[in-house]
Length: 415
Image (tube, rainbow, N blue to C red; front, side, top):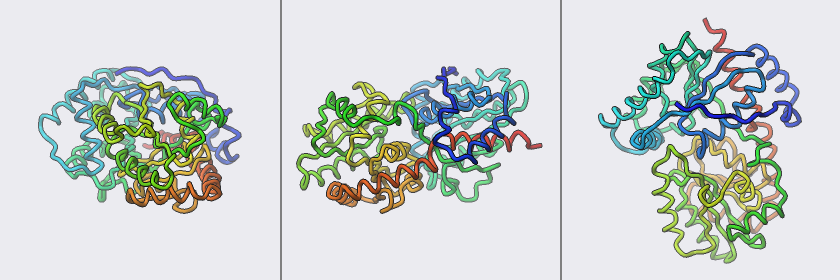
């Protein structure tokens, strides 16, 4: 495994965003857990939502007095192909789990477990299917740590074969975390089941306030014209994110607003080998429509450019067909941009339909809701104000810190 370097952050910088009760509880719990050693394990250090969540969360836990290391799995191309298949099928895709795929998964797990020899941690927190089987090697640690498995994906209707395989491991953890209760497969007997919603870092370069003129200047480099309406979706290039459906909705909107522009902004992650194929599929669907901008981290997209796209957009979409949470919804709402999302998964926790955005089920509904917002700037503004306050109260990183501290405190005092 590879150890990830973390940037320093100060928890005090976030105090103006929090209520007094939250500040007091975090102070108490962090004092109780001061000096406890935590290992966080996931599949990639950049390019995915999990990495972004850990990058925001872990420096604050360290600043509060915990000792935290972030470890990233080593993996072959075959391993990430198999674990991407796990991801898809735990979200409901059909298909059978084969013996060779199981062997690829377990072989790489054994190789990664070798790195845990004599680890000295109080807590080990593993993220998503890539890490699930590591629990079989907990005896490699110097003393018995508490183990937690965190699932970030939508497992509300999983492929039963894949769920049964993962369940045989996760039931041995000391606690498991899901985003929503309906992501927990019916009848699953899981210890210390905990619900934690992800969060954004409101002070990061991706989410800090950006002057509209500066945002417009950044987007000119990508051919975006600030005088024209702009629709944006920020997400991985993945069929579950439905970029092809986004393009179809844009084409419907363009019939009434011929000057409208669409930006599909994505980051290519090391643990997603299908991403490149679907990027090319998206580019083929966009064709020679030069009002569709398809850009990635390989075109110069950093967190600041993502901020600019979300700030400058008239409407942000997250038209997912399955979604664990969808951080990009909270990001856009925090910037005061109205959001239309698929009526799935964790998006439903963030968008109250008709109150701070719209939830949709079809391409046609998506197009109609975009038109509603483009025709009614006052309504779009009202959604934006309501949406930002919803994020402040529910989906900023200090609240994620509090949720983890509560769980670790509970586990620390278990017999």
